[in-house]
Length: 252
Ligand SMILES: Nc1ncnc2c1ncn2[C@@H]1O[C@H](COP(=O)(O)OP(=O)(O)OP(=O)(O)O)[C@@H](O)[C@H]1O
Ligand SMILES: [Mg+2]
Image 1 (cartoon, rainbow, N blue to C red):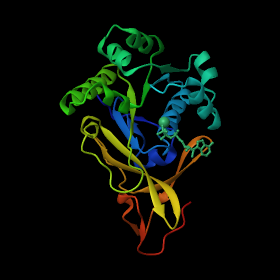
Image 2 (cartoon, helix red, strand yellow):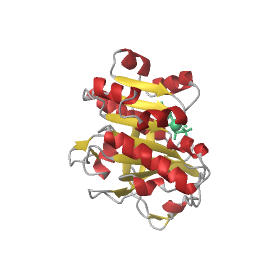
Image 3 (cartoon, helix red, strand yellow):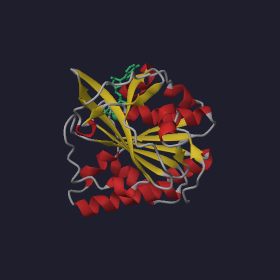
């Protein structure tokens, strides 16, 4: 399956604006952010947009507590259990090892679900869990490439989540090779400004499309991430500490 120019709306209006209409169909996107920045929320927003459009979505999660996963989604206004019972989406709690077995097998369980349901959207929450499978950077990269290629083979538009253990300040990205493998790379970051922690979103790369280079503030509310205007008059955001260099415009 190749990446087409058809756009897949993410359900996050601001992100669709930044990406000039949404993700490219069949593409792989990495969303990287520190703990609590809203990675899972954005990913579920993308799956819920699929539900709205009648497109089946599948979430693989390696979190150990299904109850907590469903409860967090409930807080955001999404009853995943009911939607799952209605066959509109599927949440699969599994292990990295099992997932790899499945993605490797073009006739396995995953391929079967995708074929039966005509699954269009997939989320992996999170790809960070695969890091425990190998300490060798080269081997890890081949595992990650296998995952991205496997998902593309199934023809889905995919979002991979990646945890970053740095909260503020410079990010340690020495082990981070996935951005090179994926088509689109989105960062969710905390920003310290005037004794307040804000959240900001930026798209760093998007193969096959232009995108806005703005760094935008967002808030998490019922329904997901609400993206505002770009920060103006601030510098140093990329380092996690914004310094006001001229008066800011109000965030809508
Ligand atoms: N209904 C809500 N209203 C406002 N904020 C909310 C709501 N539900 C969740 N949040 C915020 O979302 C944050 C967590 O979002 P989410 O679980 O998507 O983050 P994450 O990046 O996936 O976190 P982790 O790294 O722990 O997996 C919470 O810390 C909380 O601040
Ligand atoms: Mg999460």
